[in-house]
Image 1 (cartoon, one colour):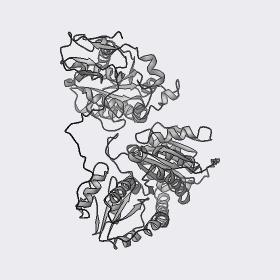
Image 2 (tube, one colour; image 1 turned 45 degrees about the vertical axis):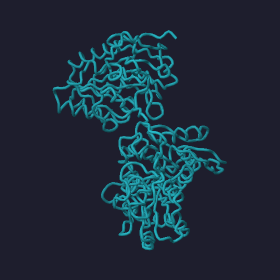
Image 3 (cartoon, rainbow, N blue to C red; image 1 turned 180 degrees about the vertical axis):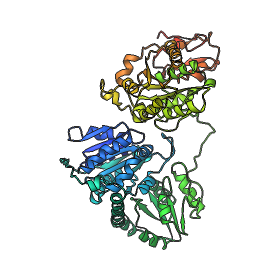
Image 4 (spheres, rainbow, N blue to C red; image 1 turned 45 degrees about the horizontal axis):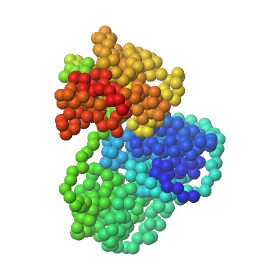
Length: 600
């Protein structure tokens, strides 16, 4: 059966067709669609597919299933792997009984991530096999192979995707498959599952080395040797992996170059002896991979060129133009740049910076915080989520990683006692990694304000349900914060900027009389939330009285709502196609009350 699938959807089908019964993880672009798709297509099957509070928890839930003999998987993006790395390092020693696939989606080019990482490097660090699909069709096939490989060698196997694989589409040939469920059966083996240093772990370390040697042979026989047998034996050789291979293949075909290409499907562990024997037969070997020189480091030789020789770019994602430049750098092509864009007329495309959605309550909260806690006397640490876009309102001073707003608020309260610290964090991020630093701040009597922006959804990555929304009445932000020992204030958001400002004036007064962190929970909604947006958006649309507009810039530099922009007369106007009718601007954003209600 053929279907046109996104790479992430193809991975989900691969999981189902490898009889995966437990799938857990944490949403993060570009990986989020994997679990949501799997959940959808396995609706009537005996499987567990749920979002965890963070990646470490998701990894551990799924890995336990694999220990009990079920085929399992964990899914996350590359920065999520940082969170799960503690569990991964131990899991690589312990191994598993059922297949265990660790799915990680990398983001070359920083499209939706705070870092550019290569998870193949993490696989090499953890000493587990990693498979690197180049297309959605391969993502489907390799997911099945990863599960089989993991079960065969009893070791976690990483399936490493990248944004261009996860979010591209292709016609995929799906196999006929009847899902085969089984009952988990944990077999007690304390010496393995609870091995302690030194004796237990040392023995597992030697066992893992033996597994890796066997996997190297498997890699050569199954993946590499069949491809070597098809090489023509040209003067020079390309070695590539994953999505980068597609760019290489197209460049060679479009330039009609007579160069062999060897595609590496499992970048680690590599059968180095066989590969080094192959490399000796070529004059020049150019390695093109995304993002780090993982393969290149393993096979480096006097005739191997790539990132380590500064012939291939080291930052940002691969393009055909960059492949062409690498070819020129090593003297394998001297022609023109056929990929340089040609414009028939001179024009400049205006860049639109990322912004909070029109009508987003986060905007009002940031606006009010800055009005009450002036920037010269305040510090604004923030976190990872759509509210990070409060940076456009200059209401954010620091962004480090998930949960760091709380820890950094603590640190700033120690380091700069002359300023008030007001941190912001989303509800999902707080559950993910904000609880532990809040406990730390409470028992060490740190003094700062933490504003939890509760819109009841993981808005930035696809509006997945938060723990509180998934278990109403059982998981509660206020109870959690109070249980940590913090002072708590609650604000039920209204689209009235003066009410929001007045509330934060009360927060300021309360803060003067507390000796522990003051947690403010702002109960809001997301304008993209189908269930809650309709009942919260008031349908009050605005226009501008140009006679009152004095071009003071408050709406464009402090409130920063996307529909607002200057017209040719130097006055603010509101784009009716972008305005969602929240009515907040009419409630007091403009110092001269230039915003008025639009009747039609």
